[in-house]
Amino acid sequence: MFEETAQAARATIGDSEFDRDTAVTLREPGVYGIDLSAGWTIINAVNGGYLLAVLGRALGEALPHSDPFTISAHYLTASQPGPAVIRTDVVRTGRTLSTGQASLFQYDEEGREVERIRVLASYGELDSLPDDVRTSAKPPVLPPLEQCFGPGDAPTPIPGSSAITDRLMLKLDPATLGWVLGKPSGKGEMRAWFGLADGRDADPLSLLLAVDALPPTAFELGLSGWVPTVELTVHVRCRPAPGPLRVSITTRNLAHGFLEEDAEVWDSADRLVAQSRQLARARLA
Amino acid sequence: MFEETAQAARATIGDSEFDRDTAVTLREPGVYGIDLSAGWTIINAVNGGYLLAVLGRALGEALPHSDPFTISAHYLTASQPGPAVIRTDVVRTGRTLSTGQASLFQYDEEGREVERIRVLASYGELDSLPDDVRTSAKPPVLPPLEQCFGPGDAPTPIPGSSAITDRLMLKLDPATLGWVLGKPSGKGEMRAWFGLADGRDADPLSLLLAVDALPPTAFELGLSGWVPTVELTVHVRCRPAPGPLRVSITTRNLAHGFLEEDAEVWDSADRLVAQSRQLARARLA
Image 1: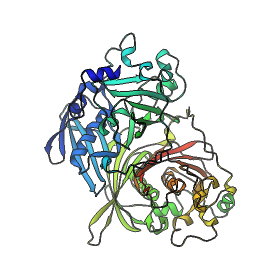
Image 2 (image 1 turned 90 degrees about the vertical axis):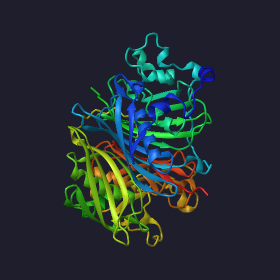
Image 3 (image 1 turned 120 degrees about the vertical axis):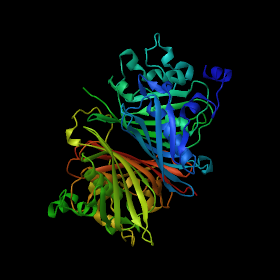
């Protein structure tokens, strides 16, 4: 199904909704403006992965290297759709790696800047890396895409919650969907096929979105509330091949009001293209 | 053996070599001085975990909360023993969490500041967290401490390499020591009992040291060169109980000149007290 839709009206890297909605405008050296799109919200909150992609894009413009190799974000206050400013700082530039910092600000009712998210990242050039691979990691086992379920496959869409779901091709493994039927598995696992709804292929920036786009693993652990991210670090390990991605998220340690979410992203060539870990708050009561 | 030594002349949290060597002196608001100790070097490089503990300590003084819940460090240039200055920035203070940034600088031959490492961290109060635990994580299986091997157990110490080993109680699982005999297992695993040699118990700051104190997993993958850390993120999940820690480090994806090292630290009460991941460079050739 994804293939068919994609063939019909396929957006491309550089010419897609995701590219337009993450585009930043240079205001002065190192300072960028953006209008955060309401299209990437869950309920009323701007998705953390979209925000990371926006900051990742600004850093890619500010630094001499293009690709985020490792990017760590601390989420400070909830972002709203609308205008924002990004201030970047080049920390160090080297031959193969450079390091930068960026903060995204919005404005309170008095027009004062409020910091939403701060990131620290090291960038390089994925295409310049050697091909050698000695990985022992195995791709997640997922049913074929056609046997997985998206938010649009529910009999009734959840009102107001779906802005981001219109923009994603997200098909969840039924084995991790017990929570939808009120029967969570008790395992901290969530797996899905992932792409952009307009057929745009994945690139390093969209991987930053992919790691934070699935429902929280906490739902399969029987929790139902919001699971706000405190910190999210993503390692981009390889430029993804065209085609849908597989995302597997695991939580092992739900304890003392916090949990980690470890995500792996695999491309259609069976390569582990990104690894991420986030620390999130969870209400156990 | 650890127990006996510890009883004989036990250092305590707040009164130990680790505490003295991570102590920072307030110079002006938010700015701290330290003399990086030569005692925590491997060959000539200052250990990355010790540096993280130093920065973690400065942030604990600068922020209204005491414990690093999540701390991300990007390593910029190699630190040397000797004077350094730490500049901190309070990013946000909340009721239960606060976020800060810190950079450690040293001086080049012309006396100019050179940034060594930059961190972004969110702090809280471990002791205020709820007790609820729904972890599915299992502690690593290690032989008893007496059946594990430390650097001092080698017939001949490696000259010049051992400053840090004098300060650690590090006993490695023989199953992960094939590399010492020229027979690496090919598995990206390293496991050890860990403590401070003077018997000081673990605390959140020493956990930052624990995650980066074992030999690189790359050695068991058949690599022999230096594996410099690009970025290291540590989540401290629980205040450790007294007694030796177990540290387990795993690498699944050695690819394209980089690898991840995932560390878990378990305390004597079988609790997962810290999780970390680093991205490091590895030379495959």
